[in-house]
Length: 473
Image 1 (cartoon, rainbow, N blue to C red):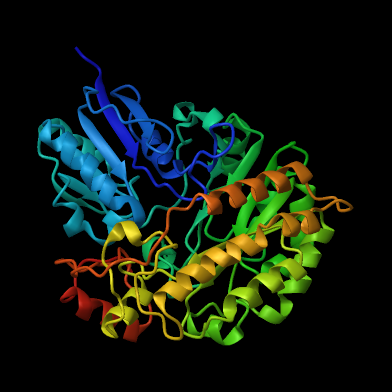
Image 2: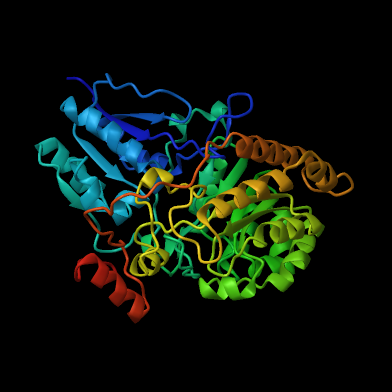
């Protein structure tokens, strides 16, 4: 009997970090989610084929029993095109990921089934239905996964030579922050769910890599848990990096353990150098008056700081670009990413802008944190787009890179140079030559997998979505 085949596909993203730029490599692999999906598919029943369209073409002639497509908003349209082609050949298609989870009724126009949220607790039912020829509609667990016994991602499927950062280990899901522009709390919840430390370490020791990215929304989310992981990591010869928020990154004991356990870089969502702006989007944890001292403190432990900033908030005018870059260079940030505020469907920013009739384009391809899809409050859309581009040019100019190079510091210089070269080249090859053109609204409304906790936000979401529906509390 022929081995049954499941073909998992990541559609082309074409972003700064997923575009192969040097030595035919991309800075980041976008496949962490699909590797986790592959891990819960029984090996004794299915062969899994994995394709990342960023680095290789899709084989539309592959004889597959099912195609699984994961997509974020900016590349979901490409995902729909891929799904349509396979379905035209009679191959059943299931979609998942952030965008299909928030807009399942839209995705079902192109797929036989949609997984909403986490896959682990619904995969058995989905595969049983596939075998019975009855896979259709939405699959969503009534509870969140406890994060115990999560299987090892299928790292054997990854073409490791095509990425710089290729191994992503998840130690938790969820985030306490609840920022209005972010999908994380509406996808994975405001409470942290932790994997047992021994299971985390077992994955790190057996994933086939000694350089690892911790794939949590906020690894320093609580005071004690990350310390447990870092104590267990000490002495294992693993180098790692993680995304964190600013508050606990100022904890000396946290940083001591991070350095001692092999941390080389922390990505921190600073977002803005304006306290009023940060309060307006519920990023209360950030205090701009501490940013420069925080960077200096993290550097004192030999750890690099990758600063994440966003332009286009209602408090931003055209002066924000030069002010931010001047601050970043003066504070000696190792690398920075600058994005334009994007009202992703189903986030609180989406509902606020939608209610105010400020969203101009509903072309999901434009939702890439580079194009401008809404009307900014204090500048034109074109001024926002050009300001973001200018910020990249300024921060990654030859003189800025030379001046910021950690010649006399103990940070990892090769990694520093890789990040700066990739981000410089990536920003130079962005294909954003205009703001997004106006489009008609979608005919279906987004519905977050998890409704907001705050009563007024919850009511706004339900009203916009056309009434109450199933959700996780």
